[in-house]
Amino acid sequence: MKKKVVVLTGAGISAESGIKTFRDSGGLWEEYDIYEVASPSGWAKNMELVLEFYNKRRKQLKEVEPNLAHKALVKLEEKFYVQIITQNVDNLHERAGSKNILHLHGELTKARSTADPNLVYEIGYEEIKKGDVCEKGSQLRPHIVWFGEPVPLITEAAEICATADIFIVIGSSLVVYPAAGLIEYVPEQSPKYIIDPVKPNLSRFYPNIYFIEEKASTGTEKVVKQLLED
Ligand code: APR
Image 1 (cartoon, rainbow, N blue to C red):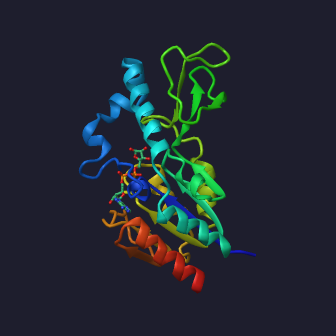
Image 2 (image 1 turned 135 degrees about the vertical axis):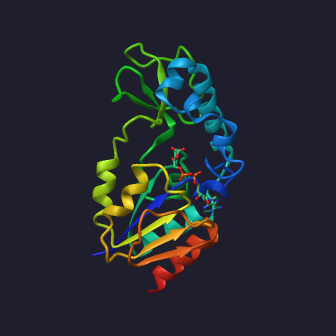
C-alpha cells in the first residue's frame, strides 16, 4: 500500500503565481480591513464591498497559473497517496492536476445561498452581484469561510492528518486556527516538513520536524525529489 502524504498549504504556495499572501508586508490584510471584507459583520454592513473584494480575487485567479510547487506535488502522486488540505480559495492545485484536495476555507469559483448553505453553485470566474439569487430566491454569497464562521471540514481534515505517514506544510504563517492546529493530529513519528522562507512560530516542539527555509517552488521540489528517491 502506498504511504500517505498529507500536505497543508497556505497562501505562500500561490505567491510565486502572483497571488498576494495575507500577512506578509504588502499582503492583502494591509490593503483591506479583514473584518470589512471577510466576516459576517462586514457582509451585513456592506455587501457590495465584500462582493467586489472577492470578484477581484476571482478575476485575478483567471489570469494566473499554477507554479512549480503545485506541479511538484502532482509528481509526488507517482509514489504516494497524496492528500492536499489547502487553506487557499484559489484553484491552482486543481489546475496543476492534484487528485485529492480539501478546501478548508472554501473556493472562489463557487457561490452559495445565504438561505441554505447546502445550495452551492459553480460560477467559474464570473462575478457575484447584489441581486444574484439562489433557486430559493436568496442572495448569493462567496463560498468562503469568513472570520468568525465555523470551518465545516475541520473534523475531516483532522482525521486525515491523524493518518499521515508524512506531513508537509507549505507557505502558511500557521497563525489562523483551527487550520494551524492540524499538526497536532499528525502522529509523533511521522516526519514533518515545513517549507516557508520565514520559519512559522509553532506553539511547541515537534519531533521529526524539518524546516526548509525557502520559497515554495524550490523548497517543494527539493522535498518531493528526496521523498521520491528514498
Ligand atoms: N513560498 C513559500 N512561502 C511563502 C512565499 C513563497 N514564495 N511567500 C510568502 N510565503 C509565506 C510567508 O512567509 C507566510 O508564512 O507564506 C505565509 C503566508 O501566510 P499568511 O499570509 O498568513 O497566509 P495563510 O497562512 O495561508 O493564512 C491563513 O488566513 O486570512 C486568512 O483565510 C485566510 O486562508 C487564509 C488564512
